[in-house]
Length: 116
Length: 117
Image (cartoon, rainbow over all chains, first blue to last red; front, side, top):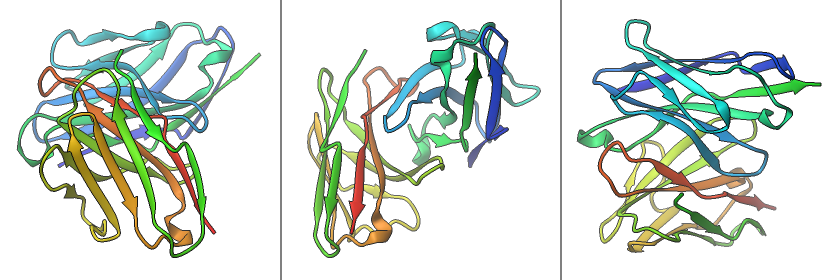
């Protein structure tokens, strides 16, 4: 079984400030981890993914995330927030093989608000 | 990147009618597609896994007779909500599993907003 917990349903930052969105996962096997962004009334866009290669993953729009096995975490960061980053962010986990092949389990989502 | 389309983007129907939603992978072949539903201010919940040429696998609690899934080709999966009721109103999103192995990415469609009156 796998699960994802996103700490904080809402995060508010000022433009130019650091963005930190927290994600912890639970998986009985080595996980694949993803961050997606969703704008209102739209589907999900992949920001970045961890697939057992480098633990520090760089994605689009200046976002990056670090896989920490000891902490079972995959927090998303961006050094300087932009107004266009305001959206909802989802962390997701999947595993290889078995009946869970390819299935994504999503966290509850974190709404990011960016203030001028 | 890979593109997945959904049609229609928005549908309003009367209670008791059936609604079909199409999910297409436009520039790649998808042997596996997934159907999710998302209630307002909530996360995505997987409904079913659709495999080309075989029956869909439904998640626990999802009525297979109510949510009919057909994956007739490598680029098209359809979800039919039969005898829709107001509680079926939701945002339905599909995703397609790209080629490249188990670590490959799911590409999401733009979603379909279903409102049942």
